[in-house]
Length: 163
Image 1 (cartoon, rainbow, N blue to C red):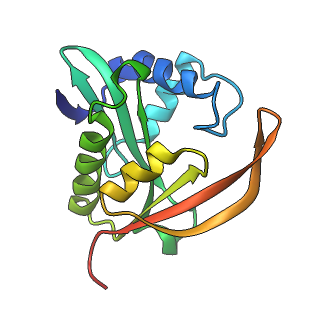
Image 2 (image 1 turned 60 degrees about the vertical axis):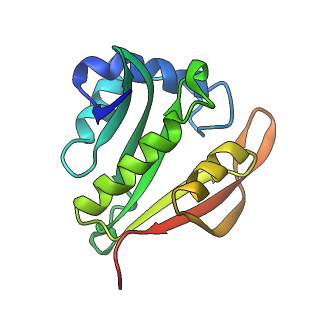
């Protein structure tokens, strides 16, 4: 499996993985993305705010991304991450490989801190983030509503450089 930067040609495969997560609480989006929307999302994540994909012989097994944490300038050294693994590839170490590379990439790009915001019922994602050095720093109570229920978000953080 190769971990590499995403290309525009990966947009459809990324969209497929992401849109399947909309049927769950793994994302708080409610509507599937169109191909055009996915291409625009991908275009906004170039340079330091990158998307990495796990390419297994031309098949996308998953993707991970860095996004700006907040809009205000003082936050620019902190990034928020996302990671999604195709159902057929879950439990095979794809997420850990993506996250390990994403952490290294964020550090290499000079970021100081990474934030993950994970629905509290997603034990696998919380465990994955712990495995790559994230710590729980808080819980946001009932900040989302999806599939007829209120959802808590666990906030996890990984420091990338010394103070």
